[in-house]
Amino acid sequence: MKKMPINSIINEDCLIFIPKCIPDESIDIIITDPPYGISSGNKLSMKNVKKQKGFGGDWNIIDEDWDTFSFQDYSILIKKMLKESHRVLKPTGTMFVCGTYRNIGIINGSFTYLFIYY
Image 1 (cartoon, rainbow, N blue to C red):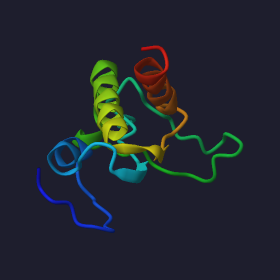
Image 2 (image 1 turned 30 degrees about the horizontal axis):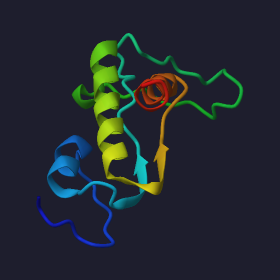
Image 3 (image 1 turned 90 degrees about the vertical axis):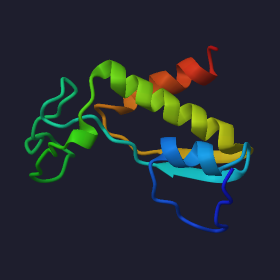
Image 4 (image 1 turned 180 degrees about the vertical axis):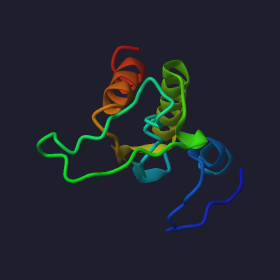
């Protein structure tokens, strides 16, 4: 296992970096902002919400390959991310996962499936 720099912010693909460089139960806090899976080619898409109260102003959806997933592939990605994060997080650690109202249910469901019921 490679040695990880101390007191650093790591901006890498967690599914590549974490298994190679981070030992079990060694991280105090994880803040992650996984892809939302909302590029315009997805079934998991978001229309412009300009007229919906509480959503701010006008904005555009991204349309990038790194954010294009089938529902099944997105669920697999989130489960892999959660499993690795759980492995490296200290028992007293904290994890924050950013999301949108379109994908946070998948994240919550995956977390519940992995760590509460099984």
